[in-house]
Amino acid sequence: MLVGLAFMAGPLLVAILTAVLQIRDLGDTGQKIVLQGVTGARASQALFGQIASLERTARLYGVLNDPKLIEVYRAQDERLNASRAQLLGQAGPAARQTLEQLGALQSQIAALVLTVPASTGSAAAADVSTRFTQLTALVERVAQQSNAQVDQEVAQLQERTQKARKTLIIEALALLPLAIIAVVVLTIGVGRPLRQLDRAISELGEGTFTNPIAVSGPHDLERLGGQLEWLRNRLLELAHERNRFLRHMSHELKTPLANIREGTELLMDGAVGELDSNQREVAAILRENGIKLQRMIENLLSFSAWQTSSVGLEATEFRLRPLVKQVLENQQLTLLSQRVRLDVHVEDVTLVADRGKIRLILENLLSNAVKYSPKGGTIHLMARASALQLILDVADAGPGIPVEDREHIFDAFYTGRAARSTAVKGTGIGLSVVLEFVSAHGGTIQIVDGQFPGAHFRITMPIRASGQDLAATAPKVRAHAA
Image (cartoon, rainbow, N blue to C red; front, side, top):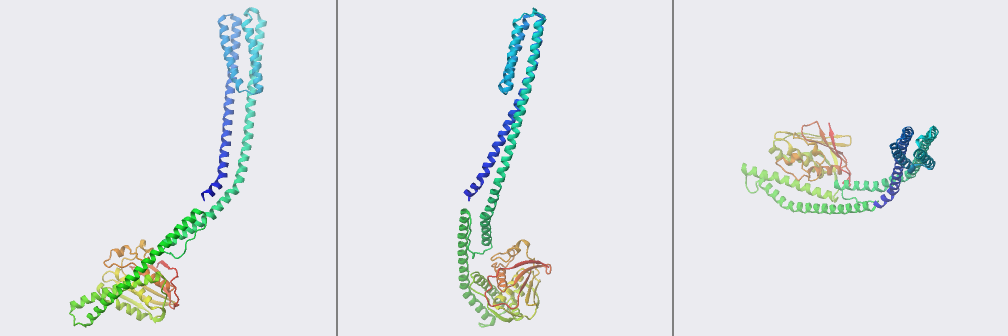
């Protein structure tokens, strides 16, 4: 993948480097032209001043005939030669020729001034003045030629700039399809495997290990997909090992628990003699906790079996009200010990469903409500038929479900903050089993707010469920504000 990106980015980098070099070259040329123009202008101004000084010294010498003025003239003549040499080094062909003429005329004037005596008369002075006028004219021509040279170089720079701009536009237009192709290739070649990786990671995070992970695309991403597939297989093995452990432990616990419950029932029935009130209270406690332990073991077995998809729905026809009565009788001792009141409104609906799983749904919801209800609180249990749907509500007067727990409240082995503060600890799979069994019947479970002060669960499921295994149905959980 990195080689492909380098191959696509190569032309772009070449184009950028070419543009940078062209811009730098144009900038250097412009800077050179500006420097040349400024230097030429200063040198021309210096020539004008030096010629004026030279002419003034020559005239003074012609009037005063002072030998010291000869030395001054020679010094000024040397400075004029230096300025002319400076211009000669950067002048063009035309300006160079004019400067050579200026140098020859300068030599002639120096010969006249230095060799001809000052007393020769006005004719010689007039000749010197004429030559100085010619010298000034030559300097003006040099200035004009220098300006013309600068203008010509500026025009050439503008032409090069236009050519460079056209070249950059052509390169940009030529690279635009390549850039579009690169975007499309990256979107298809990298975006698709990234979406596959995102889906695979989401499934692993949700605990779905049944879908194989196959990533097609660049070698690096395919290799990452292979690592995720290894991780999926490893997590699947761990899940199977956990379920096997739960099944074995649950089966191992059922036999001694059955013996404990049978012995407790014999004590309660007076098989070994009549019990006094204290003994009967202790036997009732043993019986109540035996029922709780049995329910936990059944939840573990149901969860383990459902996770391995080894069981389906055993749909039979039965009436809901007798089943609710049986569940309430099994919970009677717990309800009495917690001093919890019941508000039961159950229509006598005839269902076609898995009776055992519906019983576990009711037991887990009722046990959850008892756990969080305060002393003297009220648990509401309502069931009614609406069209072809059964609507079952279980609500308590407890603290309710915190917002931060709602996303995970139906996850296996998750216990919320409120559960951690209760005296009765659970396995954390009761609501997970409820969700699995409700979904298996093609129903949904909602968390309803506003109708009761505590937690309020509402189950909506078909009155007549098929006997097929519907465990593959995706769990559906919704939070509903009444």
